[in-house]
Amino acid sequence: MENFLLNAFDIGRLVIQIVVAFGIVIFLHELGHFLMAKIVGVGATEFALGMGPALFGFQWGETYCKLCAFPIGGYVKLIGEEDDDVPVHLRHKSLRVKPTWAKISVIFAGPFMNFVLALILLIGIPLIWGVSRTLPVEYSALEPYIQKDSAVVASYVVDPRKPAGDAGVKKDDTIVAVNGEPVRNVAHFEQLMQENGGESVTLTLKRDFKTLKKTFKPRKTRVRTPEQWLIGVMAAPDERTLKVRKVTPDSPADKAGIRAGDILVSIDGEKLRHIGQLHALIQKGEDKAHEFVVERDGKTDKKTITPAHQPGVMQTRWEHGIFPSIPTPRQVKSVTPESPAAKAGLKAGDIILDFDRQEYEKKNTYNANENPTRITMYRRGEEPRKLEIAATPGADIGLTLYPVNRRVGLGEAVALGVESGGNLFTGFFKGIRQLVTREVSTDEIAGPVGIMQYASTFARNGLRDFISFFAFISLCLAIINLVPFPALDGAHIVFFLWEGVTGRPLNAERQNLINYVGFCILIGLIIIVTFRDLRLWIGF
Image (tube, rainbow, N blue to C red; front, top):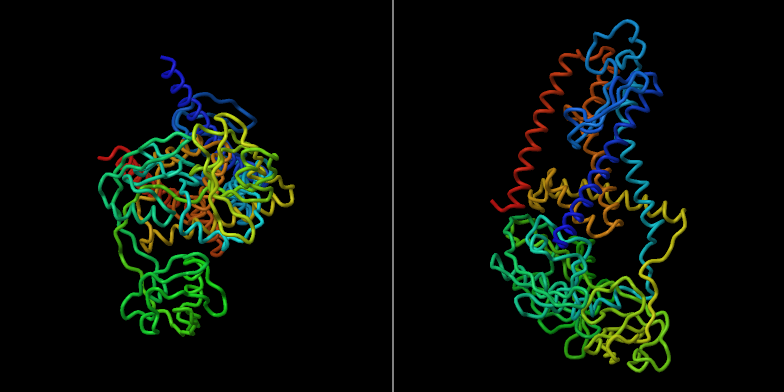
């Protein structure tokens, strides 16, 4: 009974959080329309939050404000917006009689408020929680460890609409093994998942220093790979070098004389450390000829290779919903003399890459477990190496870490918020492009049910993730509303621009008919997407 009440309380809290968050996003959108209407002298007879029958309301001047039964939208009813037949005593407040700039301002103010809300939230996140601390190490120095033998954690969010999320895999879970085979690094995890195909897969996970298993069946999808430039080699880090494992026959690398076992030293004068660096440089140069320095049997030689263009092709992928990453590196602030950590060889300034195959808890000191604590650490100028810390279970191991995040001032928070907003903005259109080119599956489109699933997941992840998610929702609402599709704000702006160009307004009945048809199409699309959401959720 106690567990039932706790679960019911948790669900109730999530529902309230989500409804309030959506309510704020919608309220500010409609408030933008309302305030701008007041500024330019347009009257408003109704201000509604939600749709359907009114639960309660009150009269505020000429406007009746109400809260409606279904929290799926809202509206402001402006005088003269839908009807040319306005009483004489109210015509000076009619939207129809206002200049074009005023009409457009009223319509644009709604999406503008959503842009402002998104920006405020994105500025507030670093201001309240800070930003990730910059470590005194080049990423390239850690890449051999990342590519060769790193712990793998589920980062950012585990997609609740995909098999792993549905099975209960959570953010920050450490992925130890796939079907019993130990996971060596991020690329190895993805390789094992794709090789498994559509068969049932069991992940061995660590969560809060406990081992658990989750079983699910990946979902098949067809996506188009992006076009790219290839030289035809498979390579992997080997100590501090990039060693060729395989050469594709008749590829540019094969024709240039590259062989398995060769060491790729540099490309165009830039020393190579990891395959990601090589791939990025090739894609940047596209069909440009590159000069490689190659080492074989202790001797170096130069090879000129021109990448071959590979167009995008349709490919089967097995979706699981996990975004794999390495654990967050942490820097040692201090080590207590003669402590277990000191005896193991740790020093202040060292960077811990892997804490006993665990993602870090958000604390800065640690107590020993029943078994010795195994860590992977990096010290400037040295290779990453493994240490074992033995101590009495429950005892402090004598290690203090710097906090994960550092505090920032208002100026830096504003800059970071604007940068994050720009990334979300461009990411939205990148996602649309990938849908059109089929680089991502249409299953990525979420309707009302899918959005609620994401909102619930982000709410469980914590307030920071929840706020970040609703910043994105507010930004999406602003962008989508500016699309010139009937029934959306963008269509009203187009109507008023037409009026400004031609000097005559579009007939109110005709405009209402266009909006009605557009509204019906939107409702139809929402029903279709909702059906897809339910299919992905329930599995019918």
